Length: 38
Image (cartoon, rainbow, N blue to C red; front, side, top):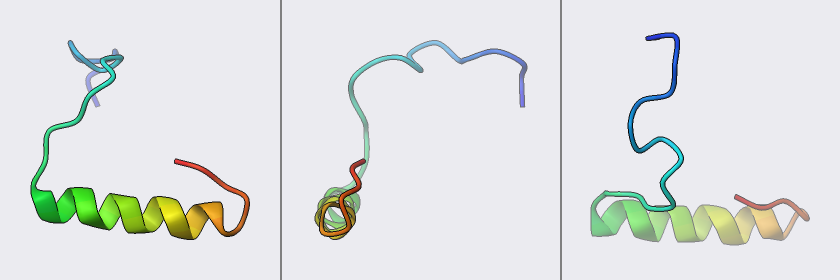
């Protein structure tokens, strides 16, 4: 914890692997089935 948001915290982008993208897409679909969103 640094006490403030780091540079880029509010940016609308993410950096990750293809596997991470697939996992997030599946999690988003699963959450949507319960009426939630990511």
